[in-house]
Image (cartoon, rainbow, N blue to C red; front, side, top):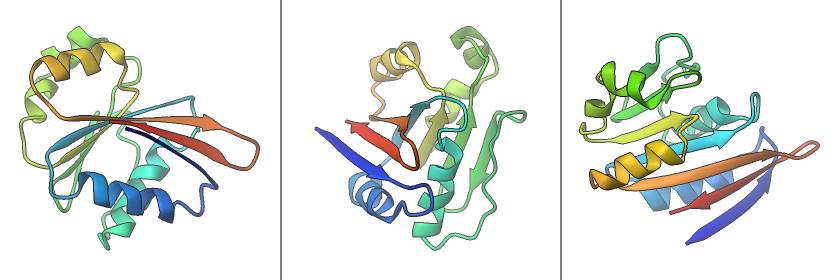
Amino acid sequence: MNKSFELSLNNLSKLTAYLQKTIAGKDCVVLLQGDLASGKTTLVQEYLKSLNLTDEVTSPTFCLQNIYEGEIYHYDIYNKTLEEFISLGLLEEFEKEGIHFVEWGDETLEELLRSYGFEILIIKIEKLNEKRRYTIYA
């Protein structure tokens, strides 16, 4: 199942509504893939807003993980190898109930998580002039 949206960063309601229907109530890992400044953290911010959660969402670039209300976890693994990720104990974090958003999750991480039986959703974000194309792969 692939689904694509072309939206501006200040109007992601169609995408967040789709995500709510697709992943709400499930334990799921969402790999966010896109260039720098493509809107990965903005997507997580808008998803929390769509759930009426008031946590301040920031990129976990330096702390690697932020935890929000509603069992929502947010990781940024930019410049981390898979071995570093595992050695930091972050793989075990995915065993926690909830939704896990991973910025910069690549195919190697996807394969590892699938081999452990995790449900994976991939969102590729492409920058277009004033919009972004969000392509979702389940």
